[in-house]
Image 1 (cartoon, rainbow, N blue to C red):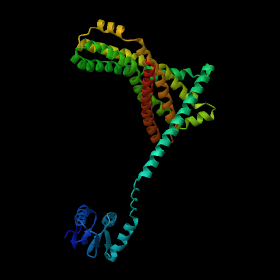
Image 2: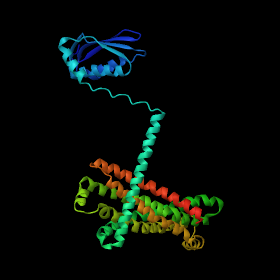
Image 3: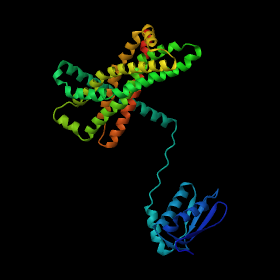
Image 4: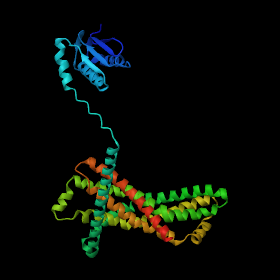
Length: 377
């Protein structure tokens, strides 16, 4: 018999089994021994298993761990295990490994109706407290903005223009490309459906109202939330981890006025411009696709756009942009100030910033839709 290979003989029937382990239960034969043990203990209806190690010739730490772990696995499955005394020269190693085995974690408590309701209540409470905290941060930011307007020297113009470049000018290519492609998609899909009714010319109205009233400002805000809102959180969060914000407070500098206000104000000034350019790009994409797909000439497209599209649709769409900008700026900066003392917290808060900002923008857009519908605009 190979000294490095153990053999396992299973005796007994019904609900009991006796496993006789012979040979050397060591690391080289561990995988085969484990497979034999699993097959022997897989019998249905098994209730009692006895491990007989009397004929065991060799045992190392890996073999002792196998015996201890298999006993623990069977005990968790409701099978009673017994251990016949091993040879005296192996008993000390087996007892040491068994004593060092980690305790199995307790099974998770069953979630009853009361526990589920309690978890729901805690989630609602946490969300409400977070919303109140964000509302308080919005109030502080608006208060600092009012103070800066009364005393313009307190406004850091260099930081403001820098953030306007990063959040506005650098976002111009992706925003215009997005608007152009949205116009192309609207024209193509609208032409496919309207052609069935011989009403292809109404594709101009579809593109104009969709781009000017809803999609221009909304999609621009979503892109800016993912691009600039996350950058705000990461930058402020990194400063929080490096204790730079504590140093600012030690120097009597207000972190909200220094860090949050220029970023929020930069979005407030640049997002309406980006939304306007996204609307123009969407109209340009719709014009090009209408010309290619439907044969609607640019002159005819512009004429119908001027005749059938009311300026109120543009005003409704552009009026949403400052609100979206304030939401994105406040959420991004607020999540940055909530970062803890680790890099993991920065990543977690950055993800939360994007999710909360996009969700809040969509909710605000829905409220705007209801509001303007009630006003008949």
